[in-house]
Amino acid sequence: MKITQNNYKKLLTQIHKTISRTEQEILQRVSREKVEMCWEIGKILDEHLSKNNRDQRGEIYGKKLFHDLSRDLSIVERTLYQMRSFYKAYPTLPKNNLNWSHYRNLVSVKDSEQRKLLEDLALTEQLGVKDLQREIVKSKPREQPKKLTTKLKFTRGKLLTYSLTKDGEVDLGFNIFVLRASCVVLGGESVKIPEARST
View 1 (cartoon, one colour):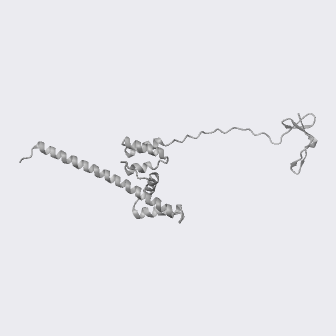
View 2: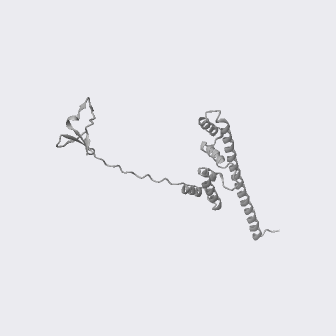
View 3: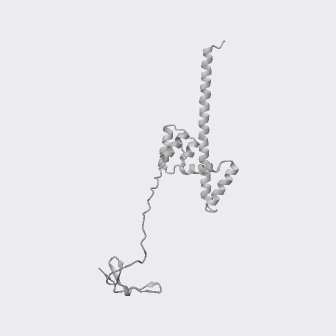
């Protein structure tokens, strides 16, 4: 039996569709497995640190642990921290179709409600990682620019400058007068005179 051109094209199309569908399913499974692996590693790290941080030296122990694990596992330290953050942000493994790159970005959002909104947006709009990053940046509250305060200008007066009245009194300001003869400075300290009058 001879293969006709039309039959051959149908066969070829069916095989191409099967290959494409299978490749897509494999990629989705691999992506899902990676999310599960990262969540599981994050859980292991968090549980280990919870148990051992009390016995060791706290933060120093954690930093050294992540450094050593990074070296021995050939996983970037930052990724290990993100895995732990992923577990802490999602104590229950998410069941959706977002990939690890999406979650790496989502764990940077500290507010859980905002994170959930962004996660839902990424799912409904089928956002790529770059689009999700833009949405995260948009959602972060912007710092208000600091208002520059203008310094007040001041003029210095002359210290200890008093004017004399016609009656021989010293005008101390604020309608307080003292007899000139009673304004005595002893050893660098002025003496208070009870005879001061005010008007």
